[in-house]
Each structure stands twice: as C-alpha cells, then as structure tokens.
Length: 241
Image 1 (cartoon, helix red, strand yellow):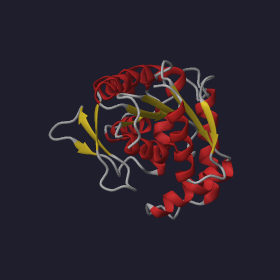
Image 2 (cartoon, helix red, strand yellow; image 1 turned 90 degrees about the vertical axis):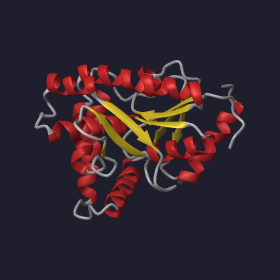
Image 3 (tube, helix red, strand yellow; image 1 turned 45 degrees about the vertical axis):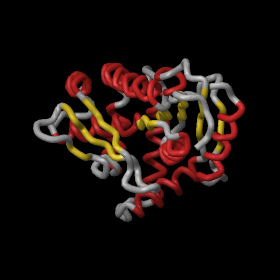
Image 4 (cartoon, rainbow, N blue to C red; image 1 turned 135 degrees about the vertical axis):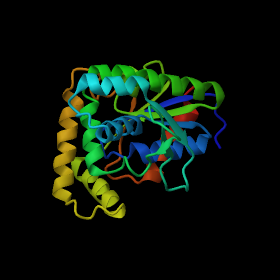
C-alpha cells in the first residue's frame, strides 16, 4: 500500500469503454481507499426505473426515484470482479444485489439516457458527495465517472482523465460483453453504441463529459491496465495530497 496521506480524494473521468472502472478499482485497492463508481449509481437507477415501469425519458418520474435512492457498495467477490452494488432504498424488504443485473447492454443504454436529465443528476450528485465525504474522513476515496473533476469534486487535488481511441474502446467493451455471456452483441453494435453515448455524454447541457483543466490526461489506447495504474500511482507519489 502506498504511503499517501490519509483520506486522499482521487477522481478519474473519461468516456465509456476507456477502462475507468477497472483502473479506479485497482487504484482504490492499492491505496486501501473506497471506490465511488458513479456509473453504477446511474445504472442502478436505470434498472430500478425499468423494473417499476418508469420510462427513461420521464425526468420527473426518474427524479422521484433518485431522491429516495440509497446505494450501498460492498467489497468485490474477487480481485477481477467489480465491487458489489446493492439498492437499499426505495425497495421493500432486504437490499437488492444488482451487481450483475446492471452490467448489460440495455442497462448501459438506460444509464446513459437517464444521466441526461438535470433533475436526476442533481439528486444523484448529492448521493455521490455524501458517499465520498464519508470515505475521505475514513480512508480516502477514488471517484470515477464523467464529470467528477468538473462538477462532482472540482476541489480534488488528484484528477485524471482516461481516454482511448474508439477502436480500442470498442475492442475492450466487446471482449467484456462476450466474457459476460453477451456474445450475440457484435463489435459493430458496440462501436455504434459507444459513438451514441459519446455524443450524448459530451453534448448534454448539464455536466457534459469534459476534461478538467487541471486533470492529467492518459491515453490508454496502447496501454494495459497495469501500465495505466502504474502511471497514476507514480503521479500520486509526486503530487501533494
């Protein structure tokens, strides 16, 4: 574990398929910090809305759910598995483990669509900041998303923007889907989906995908996860907390 000061706040932004989640999880594990996966929060909202019959274009209906949403993150089942995601509220009965349920092409599309709505983003931003504040007080936090460095935590000292070519991101996302049993999804479909999400994320009026001016840019097109993680850890060592 690296000898960083207690409670660092590290943000990693970037487009879909750039490897943010994998890299952020590795960084959090290395530092013993909490991982704030904001994409999982939007995915959880999209999944819950779908289960309740709320259209992903229904901003008021989505915002109503978002205001009551309570997410709990738990440790991953293994070093290569994503951390577990549970919806605690608004549900009746025990928390619902949606870890696998939210990692499908349909829910990925839903997450991108619900994230366009200003009222939804405003509600979920509060959740994100609460989770991060608790984590920073205890052991630090690695927050990953689309606007963490520009909107979520502009005060963060450690900001990174992870990007990659469309070709590289398509290949990674397609292999990931095949490994999860979605072999029916073609590489062409994945590329088209990424292009749609890039356009949607970068052009929305509220909190568009953008690199913070003081963020370190890392192009991972020709880099593996280990190399990206090493680059970030090296930068953290030379930057004051």
